[in-house]
Length: 144
Image 1 (cartoon, rainbow, N blue to C red):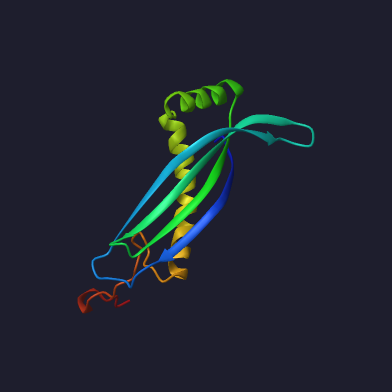
Image 2: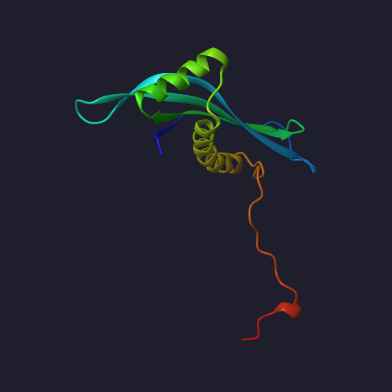
């Protein structure tokens, strides 16, 4: 996989109202920019790569709170592919779906974990279902 780095650059969590019954949390991730990035491959070696900047948002409705995470994913590939990606982005803000999926999946995994922690810090519920344990009925007890 040509992903060689991940950086968080902005984190913000805010709860603006008391929690309400029937709240909904929606999340979204967007690539905001793609730029050239020289990636060091040793003491005297650099390769041309790309820096995919993104924003990950979680909105708690109705206007109860929000979480914003901004960061970047560093991508390294051959020079031809790097230039094709950059040109496609500059022309019509298009990225090859396979490459976009790699970038966004990397960011989603890291940001989801961070957002869960941030939500807990400001007393917001998790934005996604968390596994829970429920007791079994008497008829299902293990006898051994």
